[in-house]
Amino acid sequence: MNMYEYQVGGSLKTNALTYVERQADIELYNTLISGEFCYVFSSRQMGKSSLRLRTKHRLEQAGFSCASIDMTRIGSSNITPSQWYKGIIVDLLRGFDLWEKVNLKAWWSEREDLSALQRLSQFVEDILLVHLKSEKIFIFVDEIDSVLGLNFPVIDFFTLIRSCYNQRAENPEYNRLTWALFGVATPSDLIADQNCTPFNIGKSIDLHGFMLTEVEPLAAGLEGKVANPMAVLKEILAWTNGQPFLTQKLCQIVVQERNSEGGEKHRSLETDDRYKLDHHLPIINYHLINFYYQFPSLILEKLVQTHILDNWEANDEPEHLKTIRDRLLRNEQRTGALLGLYQQILQGIQISSNDGEEQIQLLLSGLVTKVQGQLIVKNRIYQKVFNQTWVEKQLAKLRPYSQALDAWIASEHDDYSRLLRGPALLEALAWSQGKSLSDLDYHFLAASQECDRREVETWLEAERAKEVKARLIQEQKAARFQRLFFVGALVWVLILALGLGIVTFFEYGKDCSQRVYRVR
Image (tube, rainbow, N blue to C red; front, top):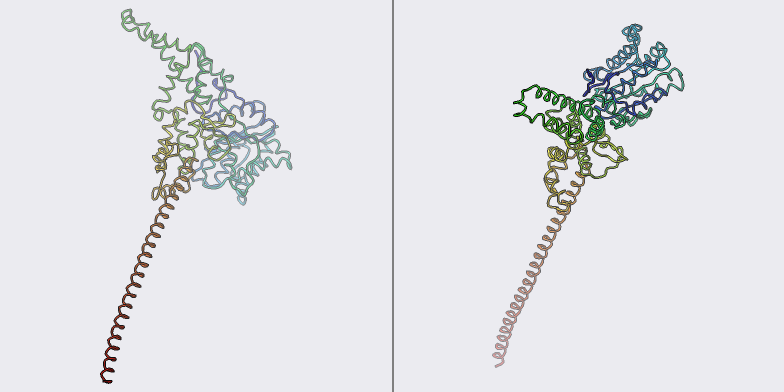
C-alpha cells in the first residue's frame, strides 16, 4: 500500500517523503558548519521551518548540539521584557536537554539585580558554553519577525546575538556557538534604530522555489496516478514556479482527482451490461482523462481553475492566498505604494530591483520575485488571482480620486480635465499626508497641483486684467469729467467775463452819457 502523502502547509517532518532538498539546504548546512552566522529571510510558506528542522536534524546526527526557539511560542502580547527573556532561556534549557541540570528559578533569582538581557548573556556564557561539550553549538530562532510586534524594544536582543559573534576575538569558546535566524523580515528590521550599529553579521541564505531538477521526491506520489509524473510536475511548476505550498497542493489535487476517477471506473465496471450501454459516458471520460494526462497542461489548467482560482477567498484552505492579500492590505499607510508598484509590474513595466522599502515589502509578501535584477510576478497563479481587476478594485477603495486617476491614465496623461482642482485637490492632498503612495499617484497629484496652479494664475491674471480695465475706465471717466468740468468752468468764466464786460460797457456808456450831459 502506498503511504506516500503530500503535505499542504505546516513544517514537514524530518523523514517526510515529500521533502524537496534545494540548494539552500546544502548552503545553510555548509555555512553553519563553517561557523558562520546565518539568516533565512523570505515570504511565508516557502519552507523555512521545514528547512530549519531538516538542517537541525542533520547537525544533531553529526553529533552537534542544537536547540530551536520559536518566537511565537514565547508570546508577544501583554508580556514583560523579563518574561520574554526568561522564555528564551526556558526554550534553550529544554532544547539542549539541560532542564534537569539547572535550577532556573534559583539561578534567575540570584541575578535579580541584573537586567533580563544581562541574565541571558550570562546564561549563554556560564551555562551553555560550560555544560555543552560538543564541538559546535547551534541556536535556531524561528518566526523572528514576531518580535517586531512586541510592546517593548528588542534591539538589545539582536545586539546580544551580534556580540556573540564579536566575542570570538576575546573568548575562543564563542567560536563553538552559532546562531541561525528564520522569518519574514530583513536585517534592517531587526535593528532599525539609526543610532545603533545595523545587524550586519552573518550570511543570507536565499530560499528559492523548487526547480525541476530537484522535485524528483514529489514524483513518487504520482506514480501509478499519471502516465508521466515528471511531465505533470513540469506543468505544475509552470503554474507555481516552484512555490512549495502551491506545488504540494497541486500534487495533492492531482492525486485526489485520479483516486476519485479511479473509483468511478471501478464502480462502472461492476454495473450490469445494460447500465454500461446506457451510461457509457463515465468510461469515455476516464479514457479521455488518461489521454489528457499525456498532455498535462490541458487537465492541469482545469484543476487549477476549479480548485484554486474559482472563488479563491472561500476555498483558500489552508490559507495561503489570503495571507498574501492581508500582508498587502494590512497597512493603509503603505498599501497604495505597494499596489501601485505591483500594478506597474503587472502592466509589464520593467522595475529594476533597488532594495527600496516598498520593493522589500512586496518581495516579503511572496507576490513577486527578482529575476536578473528585475521584479516580476512570482507565478501564474498569483498573476491570475491578484490581477489588474483586483488591484484596481483595491485601489478604488483607497483613493478618493480613483475614477479621475483611471480616466487620466486612459487618456495617456493628456486629458487635463480629469486632473483635480480646488476642494477635490485639497481633499486628495490631505488624504495623502503620511501615506506612502505609488509614483503614479504622486505624478497625478503633482500634475493636478500644477494644473490647479496654472488655472489659479490664469484666473488671477484675468482678475487683474479686469481690475486694470475697470481702473482705466474709471480713469477715462475721471479724465472726461475733468475735461467737461474745465470746459464748463471756462464757459462760466467766459460768460462771467462777458457779463462783466457788458456791465462794464453799460456802466462806461452811462458814465459817458452823464459826462456829455454835464458838458452841455
